[in-house]
Image (tube, rainbow, N blue to C red):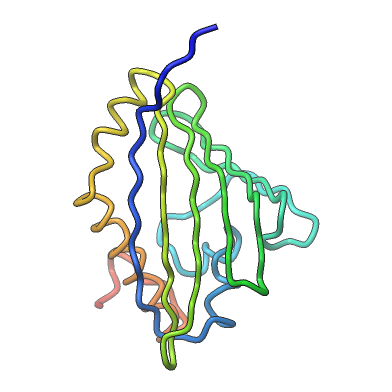
Length: 160
């Protein structure tokens, strides 16, 4: 048995979304995300209800292998969802999303915490910088707000 200290990168970001909580929360679902996130296509979804729920499992392609996602907490009454993302041999990640009211819209406080499981994972964690995360979250925020305002997905060919 080898026990080691974690090599981990954790970042949080607050998105400002232009719709109320009840409209945004259902979109924090791997199936519904296909409606607004350009290039998001899960390969396998395992669900009883057809949408996000506790113990929901899905697989997405990743640059270094498939990512296995598991919804550990899905609490619509609290506007909270937590998922684990495992890229075998690379990283384990915890994703938390907490929505809160903001006038006519809402905030989405999003935290990703990536833990390395290998030297390739160490390289990934090193590139998961605050600057990278901010750009990633801003792109996500732009796509989601575009969908909330227009009802269609923002793609490379769509004028923002």
